[in-house]
Image (cartoon, rainbow, N blue to C red; front, side, top):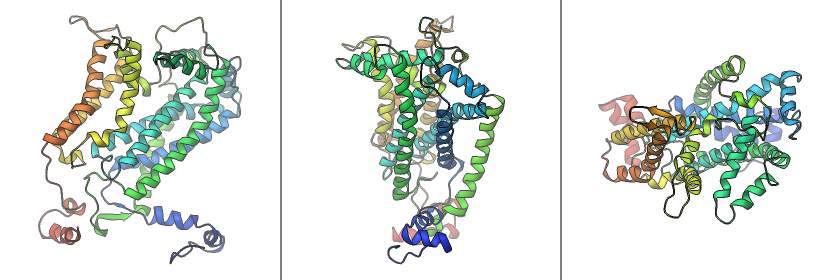
Length: 436
């Protein structure tokens, strides 16, 4: 039975189910009646987009797994069979492969939005941390999925990345042997990666549920970074944001469909259409584009630091670039959330975005390539600069800006900028401010 004064939702079968398992009442309360700030912009659409992409990736992955053979002698041919002989197999494969790319595009936009509008600040620290956990799980899932086609780049990417763990003192070689299931990347490795690649999306789904629960407990941030002061600052999630999210999702799916049907290999590597050959090393081994900034940080540490060898230093820097995201809520000391009211931080935020793009560009090119021949400036030199700025932004700049930056005055409520100045704004904000 439903507790308290809450009435069952619907009639007939729906009501019968709801009186015994109040799932419809829960959805009604947490989504239809859930009050959200009225000033969301289009960047707040990406939560719904990510949910759609996760479900699509799970469904296409399950169907593809029914035809895939996790064996080094059969894997490449089984993927080709999916493309050629399985009904609509080419479409499912392209949806899954390009879905990973668009999943990461949406995640990165979602995270940059959080950094710009201060969505990691009190009381949403745990919400942010769960989001970073989802990113880490996505990266692990995508890496293992990239190995499954067993092409040239799949094999050598797995060899290079797994070998990085050997740099860890004492236990590194044991970790690599555990990942490989032997003494080289071979059939046991492919089997393990296939099993984990199948499992991790469901683990991601579980963390997403926790992420949504945390969101409904702490409430959504908004472009102003000002907490709602009353009913005049909020609207029901349905129908206002369900319609808005639907429009944004339709646009996103249209762009996604263009790449699936007209440019399916745009983000892929031609080398991966060659079967894995352990005795034939590709000229330039690169991961998928969404790993390139972290790959650039890894390669940029090509020198020893005190007693830390270059290889270990690169691994520490790469994992440190991810770990620093977990502690962002405690590095940024500013009491103001949104960059709209932090003019200095806003400039440095866009410099940081450009820095991330530069890292991605560096990660996709050979370190010794010349950028400016006259200055003898190589790609690796830009990698040093971009890596330094990445850590400088989080570890040095954010704490200092929280101390020395003078933010602009905040509006009294979310409604105030909409209603404008004068008596209208005063009457709209006076009552909530009195309650506060």
